[in-house]
Length: 402
Ligand SMILES: Cc1ncc(COP(=O)(O)O)c(C=O)c1O
Image (tube, rainbow, N blue to C red; front, side, top):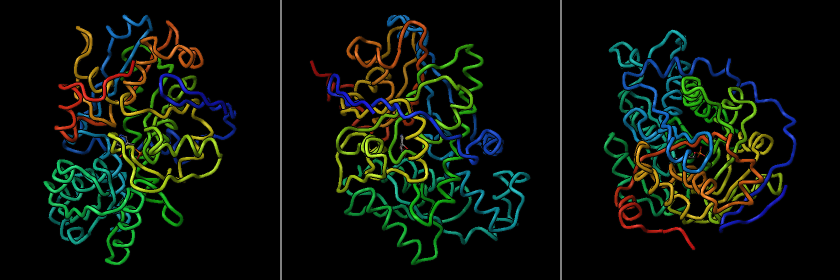
């Protein structure tokens, strides 16, 4: 493991050789049913893969792409892919239905509604996952209880309440809120639909992580249409479930790509700490970063071993990297598609742009980014708190340092 800091960003090169196979539950055959299931959602369409060709050409690289999850299911983030798949699987198990023969709309039929209406789903969330759970529950006529950490912006709470869910803002950190949601669900007999695992609770997070496979399948199709192969894939991590699930599936489509795992610096760099210690490390207390979706102190134990073995680099980024990505998304060079990107969504583009702008020469060299490179980033959310987006994009809050 080699660690260095350049332009205020901490990097770690993971030189442990990937000894392990991709876990069987994340192979392309194990996840083949996921995109088929999502295609049965009435709101489903593949999200766009934006080709920022002008930015790439200006930087003299072969390509720069952004998978725009802000357009996912009308929900402004990728997260409902996980919750809709997991909840549908749970209901099929509960009712003894054949999942492969069930469409999402079947759950809305009067016959099934009588059987599922009394189900209650609970989760802890920084925003997007809870929104996915609340949305799925609302589609199915079920109730949802959503727990959010201290300091959650009112706009994020409202975005969940509007789906009829009961929202409780706790006075603890994200990790404390996960523990509270678990305790409340156990006490009331609700089903906890949590996107991170803990001892004795792995089956549902596994389903949620598998649910993200639809993004990877769409990217594989879209890159094939673009006739390019990504050489560097940037994945942002909170608990790491999304990054791990995407790394596992994308690596099967693009075996020679390098994977860069990104998280907020200091306040929540549990991946970097864990990779350094080769063990599970938690960062305690209420943490502060504008990247609310990535503000998690404890990595998902189900996925961390995979990230540890297969990620090529870890990057712990200050908030200005995300702010840079948000501004670039909103105001790209003429000819490239503008898009709205939120704090946690934009950090991949922010880092990729810094790498190709010449501000990170040492890191660029170490990552082997050259004129043949094709960079792929994920805009995992649009603007979740519009006031914050305006401050950053329109009023240049958190500018790049000298
Ligand atoms: C917008 C956004 N991006 C990325 C992530 C990271 O996902 P994970 O917590 O699975 O690492 C989240 C998590 O909530 C998120 O909301």
